Figure (cartoon, rainbow, N blue to C red):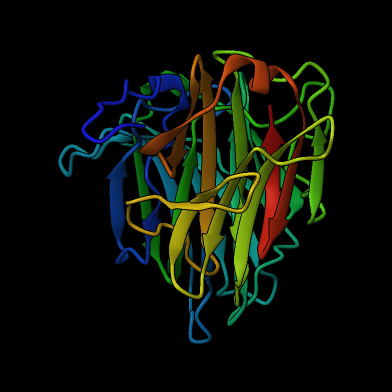
Length: 306
């Protein structure tokens, strides 16, 4: 990429709403583009040791204070009883509908958690710490939801938004994780318009994170490397030459990330957490000869898609 060269924007369908770190609760935010089938929201946090009652996550139809907006999906873990449980409900026209109760809540005071909300065509499915917990059929149109609200006894560490369904049809509904290092075959090579998506969580004490593309001879003409020691992000050539990417370092311990590699004629573009970070040159013949995506480093992977 030559100095001063302008990049075409990343297509909207590939943009990830930036994650939010350590928001103050109560917290209300707009969901970019609203909710639709295939969208997922990740909530990472801690239940305080002194949590006395409950917290709630509301997927709202607007953000007005008066009148109160409809709530399409109300997710309400409760800790004030001897048997912690979750209440789900819908608020429509200022009136709560019939509530649904799920026992055996896998959250405890003083414990950290990762909750995934996966929105399908007719229902939302929720997993807690990697295990399916509940599903709730919509009572209001999903397209009306445009706001997320978080309230109550909870310490939120991160909220992540995913715009593209990362799950393979006929496979598991929730990301089961990939072992690291991870190898992903590219039997047909890569072609213009193709996108590689890598999503995951940075470990607590990270050292490095590497995404490399290898050809039939096991050479790596393209490698993206994040170094946590000096907080740099760089392209590494097959000869080991390093080209630093002039951009803020967006990887953080115990935080979600999404790497997008968008292939176009003449090279590929990089986006991290929805922010375009530049491009690197690569001819079409070299792209077609790539046969393997390899990922290594201090991360837990949720999704690898090409």
